[in-house]
Amino acid sequence: MAELHVVEPTGAGTIEQPEHRDIRGSVRLDETGAYLIDRDPTYFGPILNYLRHGKLIMDKNLAEEGVLEEAEFYNIASLVRLVKERIRDNENRTSQGPVKHVYRVLQCQEEELTQMVSTMSDGWKFEQLISIGSSYNYGNEDQAEFLCVVSRELNNSTNGIVIEPTEKAKILQERGSRM
Image 1: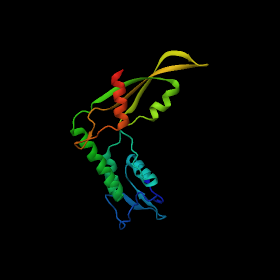
Image 2: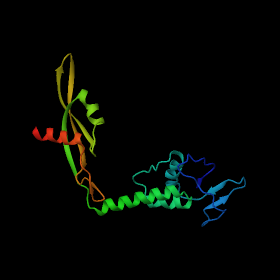
Image 3: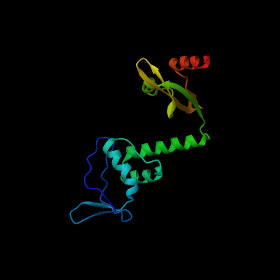
Image 4: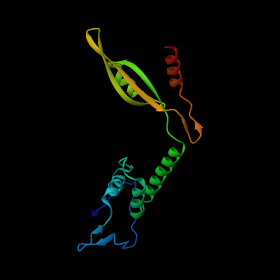
């Protein structure tokens, strides 16, 4: 049984006070006047985190429909809209078919690694780092070399609108094609 004592919203969402009600035996008052809520605690975590932080944080194995049901139960309108939007986005993504990715393998030195990963743009994301084991002497220090695997979705469009790469990306693509 999940128990809700005090909620002080951060402005992200508020539990609107409906009239005292007993919905399917889910809400009762105890002898001290505290609300006893008999709901699935699995879905209460995302509700509580949303009220604390203003962000929807969910475990990927948690059903969004369950969180939606709880958001509706607690009458948190902003969270209801957010979860419905997420469900709609997921349905659109799955209706477009399987997502294909393009992968690139970049060779870099140890000192370049942080800058390379932090400056990735245009939908590229880090996938894997592989030490190729060869180190060489650069100045007075030994430098390790790595292969960095990055990827992005092949279909670079959103709702039918094609997203053009930035000038920086075009320059990098041009340089890469010359190698």
